[in-house]
Image (cartoon, rainbow, N blue to C red; front, side, top):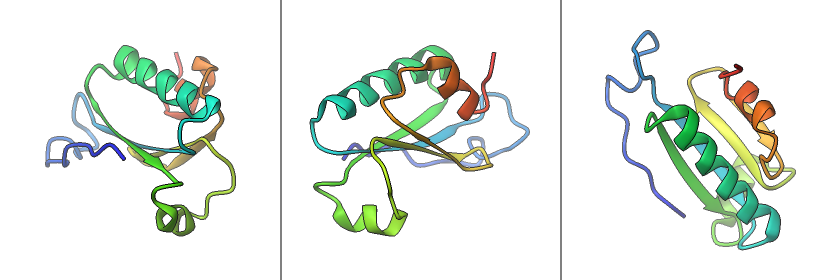
Length: 107
């Protein structure tokens, strides 16, 4: 699991410039789809969110209780927690346009 930095008041301001995106990516170890999803979301975040994101990667093999709490049905799974509304995207995140749309960043 990769921990991200905590949010502060500026990060959670819904009207603020450079709003922080809080993302959780659930993966299954080092599987092909999991490693693709990690690579793809890091690229998308670096290119389109330019440092205004917090990304936590959770391996459900190591954190089974988290998977149960989240009621995961398919993996890899990206959950956008903030800004609201919460959204879920399943797959290796290779379709950049679909991921941007899911994050509310459609171009």
